[in-house]
View (cartoon, rainbow, N blue to C red):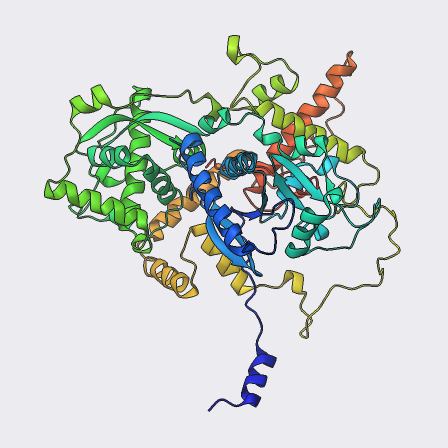
Length: 593
């Protein structure tokens, strides 16, 4: 029988479960109904708020249909659900966008448009970096805005960015933090504390400048050669393309088992009934599919055309990769509980039972879309980069001055400009520009402070954290979230060890050959300076007659070295990534093999 002492003991030991951290590739958004003046006491405020939120939810669904009719999400779609936190009702959503940063900005655009339709709703949006809208506008922010005090201060209302200022005007460091209920009261009762800045807003929403046109540019249509069953599935629901590409992109030996089996009778997408169809991808997904080196499975041997017909071969190779991705998606044990896999299997069962019929060649030719987009956005080299940064693009007509997509030149120039601004800022330190204590002193730093060491004398910053390692492996490999599932997956991988020995040896040989070609393994190689010349070779560069050309060369070399350094990091941390992080700049992942 429970006594009061038992209850008291339970309360003393109870700790609330902490809110899980937001994954690196996810964006979280909240919509609140905050009228300009408090509702009269006679009205049920909670019921009124819920009714308004349901109305906004329906409006969001209509807006999504209008703007994103044919849009394909990289991983998860925009969604809103009614939730209650701290006694406050709101619409909440979280979207995992994978490697497609543009999906995050599509969501910001949707939310901003929604606030234009409903004047009394206020929107918060954040990702793993926190208030990323402030990060976009870092160069224009007042000195008092620090990451530590930014929570619950940044809002979108009526299509505009609003920032809650501190109680007193501050030009220096601010330590005041505000809670969500406090933020709501300030919005409702103290409108004078809402900062409205055109300059900050333009920078924060800079990536939305080409929306809604940009939405269609996030997708890519390509004609590829795939099995008829695969064409049927993608025609039924084009969104199936994203999980199929992801299954191919994050494949492991377990996922590859069906393709390596000697008995291929169980394969769903056999290469014996191929058709040419136009398939719509996300741009990121298409780049992932095209960039991966993938040995032709034995089941596809002899099915691809000769490389002499390059166009036909490229279409068949892309189709082979996609078909293999679909095969892995449907057969991998870790995918069996996914709704998309169940849907696809039901459709395939309908084909087997005769309830659905596969498309005929005539139907595909006469009724299906035949769109095929230009792939020039995939091809960017340093010669193009040099021409674009100098403003002397080699394109003609509408393509003049453009390489890759239309925003590449502007984004690169902004990176170079931000980097130069950072280097020329004498007040900038290792913590980054624009987030420096205005007092300009290091007196608060204890010079005698030593690194934190645990009881065994181990540096905690450098210690190995098994849980963190498991988490990183899970995210990198796309494994299930539970530790038991991860352990099971690793055990399955271990069981395949003997079968994969030759494959690993071959991979090692190829890696060594590639590294030998770059000269990295040459211990007698002479070090190079930033311009690419061997050290001690003397000053071979002639002085430029034109000062503008000198500036251009500095910008070009800077951009080149930045990109080369980022590529050399291979997705890990490094000097270039760290410097860009200091300036609040994020670079997309390099998905090239």
